[in-house]
Length: 423
Image 1 (tube, rainbow, N blue to C red):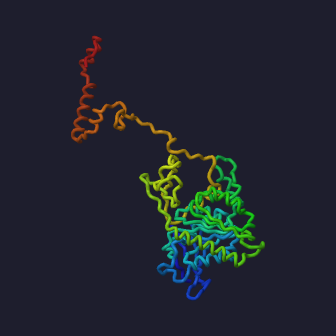
Image 2: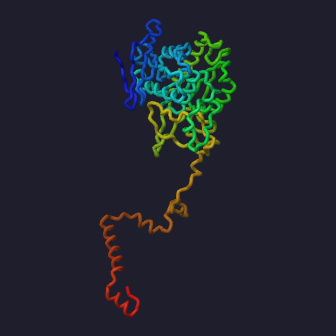
Image 3: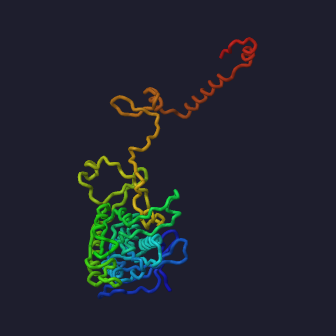
């Protein structure tokens, strides 16, 4: 069997094995499905993903600049179900490179986060995505929450998130008690899954059925009002979380076609928005995040003026690699959302550093060291050569030695007569 390998990161690779299958053919246009196997650190076995591309993929202008990573619901069968399979097919037909990550049904959320991240790493480093510079993270049900968690901490350029039947009212899986609190206190488990949404600053699209028990439209609208990014909703009447009219049934062709149309419209909108602005480096080595969103009312182009001009700036985020994603070790913190007990203090309230300086009086505002006049400052500014500095040190050492080298005759005179010793 011939395998096509490529390096991902850290000595780990991914490869295409097995024959590629044609899942759709419309004249000369074909959609291929490629089985992809991805290596994991510390494990011998690989996990599987499915890559969908259209024919002539390597031709110029045949690939959209936005790639798509799809995550299925809890049951792995939904990865090949009507909704996810049809969505991957239509996205690939439109020129998007699509990766479907296949989770084990019994896998916990923390492992799902890791597998989703690694599948995106594998696709980002593959030759199929060589012209892709930003990503659309999408998922159905539990996979929508996976995409939201990863999107909130992604190192790469996230163009947007497409969340289908997001389980808003479903609490996340509990983490181990030993990792919950370093103080030995019981872990506080979130009551819902609003935490990951509040960290998404990219454009988001939500699609849900009005019979979805885990995602009421009114509750979702209230949550979106607190999200930092822009949101759009598409509510399908008469369907549940699987976009089916009846329980334990599949979605109708009409609903699936309409859903694919909405997702494609959102994906093309992300393409039209252009690349995500890169973070500009600051003098201290941090990154200055350039928000692609328009400025708030009352601010000029440089962000000055208006009621928010006096607000304390947020701390700049540290630099991070642009390819790939972060590790899944912070999954529980992402699910819990912002910590209400942690208060960020602005820089103006920081403890001042001690300095031996005072502000001089006069029209010129300069700093002068305390206890020194202007003449001493000017003398200190004059450059001193190495030879002159050595001569001064020799003189000072000679004077110190003269003060300590007392003749023995004077010491004996002081001891016999008790007269004070003359220097």
